[in-house]
Amino acid sequence: NGTGQKNSAIIVTLIYRGKSGLKGLFQKVITWKVPVRWYFWALILPVIPQWIGLFLWAQLTDTELILPTITGYLSSWLQIALISAAYYITEELGWRGFMLPRILFMHTWIKSSLLVGVIWNIWHYPIWITSSWATTGSLTEVSLMVTASSIFAIGVSVMLTWIFKNTRGSILLAMLLHGSSQANLTKMYAAAGDSSLLGSSFIIVVAVSLSVIVVLLLAVIRNQKLTTKTT
Image 1 (cartoon, one colour):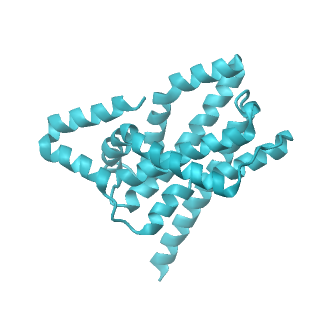
Image 2: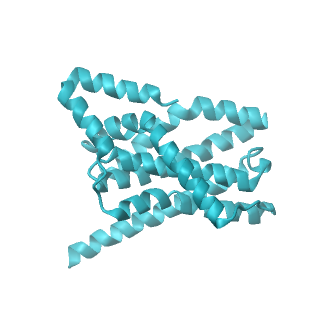
């Protein structure tokens, strides 16, 4: 679980920055006064590539999806997303609240995203490896699933950093994006059925889809910067 990151962030901040530093850390959790569009992006950005990946995977594997109704999906996804967002203070207080600002101080936001993403992956490797082995019993499938999960998580890390740096370091918005992503993944696996858990194909296709969306996002951001410089 993520309590280790949260507790470490609190303890180290308290030791080196005192109560004022701790207050600043928690202030980011309640940084909510940001333009509405960032709430929209936090909720939608991770969902789009997951849905694209689901439909691509279904076509590639000739799998019949069990799709929910639109109203049923929206209601369930949003509820789970909000509940998950509240839970993910346990992770985001450490990753985006404590670690990311310090890495951003030394590197560009893209490189910082990658560095945090790699460390984030390593933290999850034990649970990814054991769960993959439990469902597949194959070292090859475990390797493929862990690799795909790593690519997926690094993509999400880029999204989280983009949101974070555009919302005055809001941990709240990072929690919302993290919660939205996990909530939607539960709906994806439910729609895909048991076969999505018994091999690496599903997570590979979803990871590739998310990576493509991240590359497109970076291209749009770069183009906007170039346009701004020339006007």
